[in-house]
Image (cartoon, rainbow, N blue to C red; front, side, top):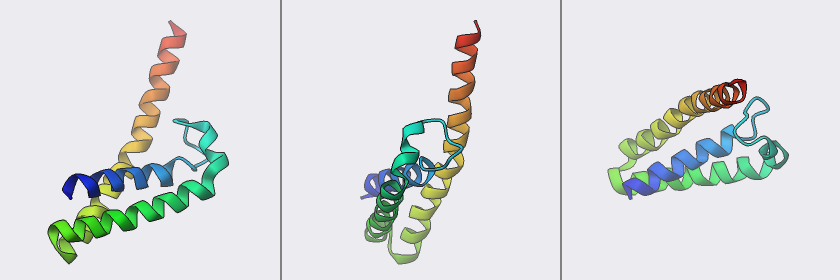
Length: 92
């Protein structure tokens, strides 16, 4: 169950991040913003349920949301690193 809520929380973060107009990981995702956000909400609810089953009510809620926040913080950094790597490769 632990892997389930961690993966679902990370997927939820992707679902919230990809529709952002500033992201460059997958530019075509902005066209599917409504569907991605709906899937993200579903994923975070399922992640929270799985975490509650694994850890109990309070710890489960906090664990699922902590993983969501971690992924939401890391995704822009991953995006920036990927953009930097591409620019460096094309500049050489």
